[in-house]
Image 1 (cartoon, rainbow, N blue to C red):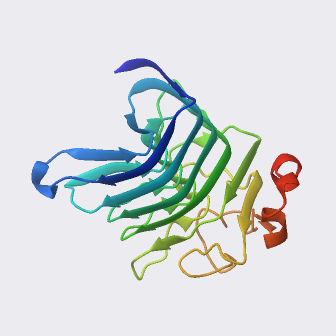
Image 2: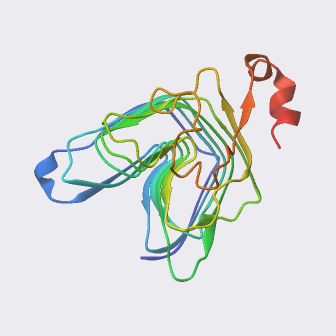
Image 3: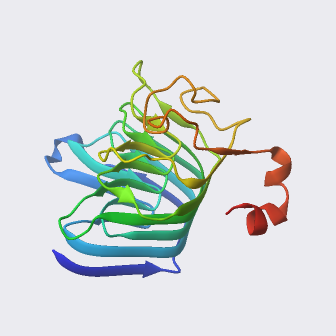
Length: 231
């Protein structure tokens, strides 16, 4: 497939999505707004939100991406002015994220743009490559500042603790993942039951520095924080 897909000014409310029988033999994709925009397709999703999404991805022979907004898309995409709230994403598979499950690179594009996003959702999986914003990204985010707020929990229901993050579960590029404008609520936003990430060696801490700006309960209750505080 080739071409351009533009999705804007859309919303989804109180939606439940379950993957189908695992014996179908096909790869499935799950997204609150869009399941799949892959191949030679430039995708732009802007000014959209999801409220009350319940995803249960357990019965499938394979899953290529699970996201609160889009399951899987290609590098070169623009994901901007998006939010997901009051939602739960439960998966048995890799490539699971609050905004997008997987961003796969293409030869015509060097990266993607993800910015101005807000996630208030609990995200869990039996597998790793699990992120509060992005499950897997093959290339880098070209946005100088992400302006992202993550308030939910990210939890891998397994003894291993690899590639689980509030931001990106795993990025193939060795480029430093630290970006400006990554906000989270340290008092109640957990990663595998932990409030800090100082002892982890995953996508967040590849630079050995904590990339987050931690906000207080007072910040979250102040309307001016959302208009003037997130930069």
